[in-house]
Amino acid sequence: MRIFPLIFLFLASVCFAQSTAELQPRMVKIYGAGGFAEMEEYQSGFLISADGLIATVFSPVLNTDTIDCVLSDGSRYKAELLGVEPIQEIALLKIERTTPFPFFDLAAAAARTKDQTLDGTPILALSNLFNVAVGNEPVSVQAGVISGTTQLEATRRAFATRYHGPVYILDVTTNNPGAAGGALVSADGKDLLGILGKELQNSRTGCWLNFALPAYVLQEGIQKIQSGEAQTTAALALADASDRKKPEKSVTLEMLGLVMVPELVARTPAFIDFVRPDSRCARADLKADDLILYVNGRLIQSLSDLDSELNYIDFEDPIRVTILRGEEILEKEVK
Image 1 (cartoon, rainbow, N blue to C red):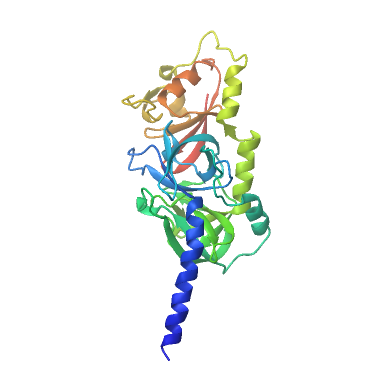
Image 2 (image 1 turned 45 degrees about the vertical axis):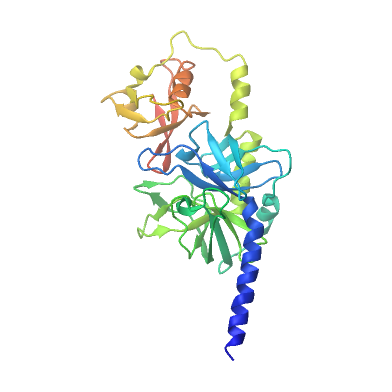
């Protein structure tokens, strides 16, 4: 009599292994900057096109010229950061090879999830949590259920997130180091449902949330990056190639009241070390340990990028600065 439950469990495990095995080649282990303020140097992502486009979340891991991507077979690729959608905190990477990549069909996933109620749907969450997979090992797979769909109201450490759109709340612990950017798929492995979000805490209850952005929200962010509505490195290159002129007197870090961290290595991230009291940046509420991400909408990936960008800003002009504070993205105006 007991053989039937055993057969059922065996068949279920075989089906689970087959479905996840088909998903593994679409997953990406991402390595970049880390070691600052206890930030991990790894996260997750997944392929969304045959020519190597990768969807992931934006984090300090990507704040470097050297982004390494490792696929399920252990092959390694250097990735280019094409752009970031700062409100949804979505990033788009690109890797290259001569043969097509297996990928999730994001357009089809967006159509399946748009205006659909998925509460109670069994799911799988695929990610490189805790950096368990470093080479050709498969990423981790967690099974759970979408507990509900809600509008995001949360804090990262002590600060409110700028994104207040729809999210899926999950009943499985996905807010682990390295899990952000992983894929949320249906339990049968056939449908992409969303992208795993960062560690997030509910602003009302204080409970940590396990959540994912729906696929249609992810698609909206990717489309903004590809259309140029969000900042892209390609758009920057075109702008820099145009008749961009330096003012007679450019603003400097000293004028702004900023002291940056020492440039110990190439491409040192633009972390603020000290803000002088009663300076322009102090009045704009910039603080030590803030990471400068954008200046007037232009992506800042290093201290040298920051110095270069300030050369094009008149010393009397206001400056729009986007920063990462803790794990929250904030925008400040320096007058």
